[in-house]
Image (cartoon, rainbow, N blue to C red):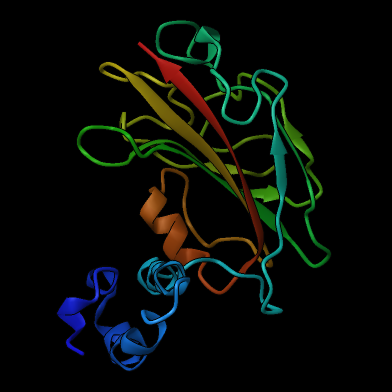
Length: 209
């Protein structure tokens, strides 16, 4: 069976094609085959993700007093309001974590994912961030802030050109501090923390203009 005849296989990168060729013809014969194949194809095409060093996924529970998961972010925390960061809290930081990194971004931006916040080297003992984190390169806790896509240090709130966008606040528990200067980009942080992530979690809010 040619790989091109398998509708779900087109999403799989080169590394997974050999596997898919061997299993396509078998699993498509069953009524549940398409569902199984779809899930496998999705897993092979997702690309790298940050799993715990022990091999299993550990999850940080992230919450905010300002909005619920999937809820609307109040105007106060956007460019239409005070443009200050929302309060965040979390649980589930594992033993052995030394620092926390935070990345806030909008995957619905018309020109690609827009970065709203980069923060790293926050001590793992910290359990929350109060609203209105100042736009300083370094915070009293020792955390450093990177540069967002507004070309500013610290937080830049939702400011979509139109429609409803999703905003993700992603936390990562790391086994070490990152050897990066203030003003580092999201890409810098993601690269530096590879191999050091013990757990991760996220909170998603929405905003409409």
